[in-house]
Length: 433
Image (cartoon, rainbow, N blue to C red; front, side, top):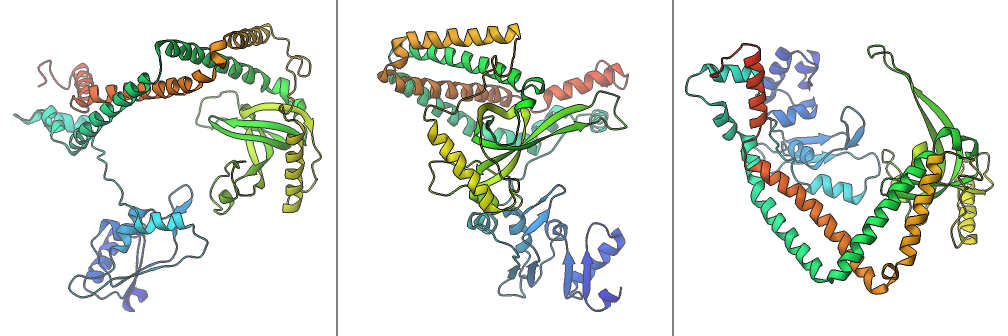
């Protein structure tokens, strides 16, 4: 109250509704000269002001601090300038940390947030609609905003489908029938080898086999899906036990192993304190920055038999850079590739299934070496075209399924299931009454 008497107001979701309403009325009447408010005030209410001040360019979204999005900035800054009173609105953005030009451009010149319908049918809504004579729930679904948004995407999806078909036809013209058969066989063998190697990777990365070799200074290669981190140096590893919560049934705790690896990271990932590190591209002109990255054990893609000297204290940048120089020198010393630990001789894996997978991979690789068509330079372009064709066919399959669903009324299957449940519970009759 003392603040309101001096023309200063506070508005946020934690206030009592009656107090928020009083503040909104006073602000509309021009009795509040300075209002401290959250984004809810500017987004949900039409309350123009002469000047809008952002005290920070970051906001807390419930999990972490992030930059204000373009839609949020447009909505909040758009409150500056009162119609009929001000010639222009004034917006002040206070920045207390370094901001990348791309982030500023996205914030200041970004697009407003897309409005997506979250419409859904509940059991109470369905029963109330069925009580009213002459109202069909299916008709209501067809007239909803969600159905409108769904139907609006159909023409663009059909155009995309036609474009993909034309691209596929163009790729087929670049390959002869013989090249298509050769590329199909090559793709099949390559896929089988990759699957078998993933099986081997899973066996090697089991704690029973690999933990004793995770000493500081050993070189390891890491791959997370399609992201290849390349070679790094082990710093340490630790065991993490995840126990079940009290409200969950009693189950055995989950045990994970985290390996701390010193990697060559892209320097741009360190400019933002909240961004995750990204691997350095050796073909780029930038110099890498050595950072310790925690890695799950199953992401290891190769454990080398080579170990390098690792300083005891890695907090200083020059110590980490010395490891980078050692790593670079080691990679140059092995032009054919850094040697890996042998699963049988070094890791002592004697599982018959593992040996069978190794023999299968060797057989597939022999098939690739014996087939002269696979090493023919004229077929290299055909292999790339065949991979592109497969990618296009996957997209076409997804589009076909979406178009098949698009011709129907959304949530129609859910509506039928809900009616079936209501009939079983005797809320409605067989005639939907």
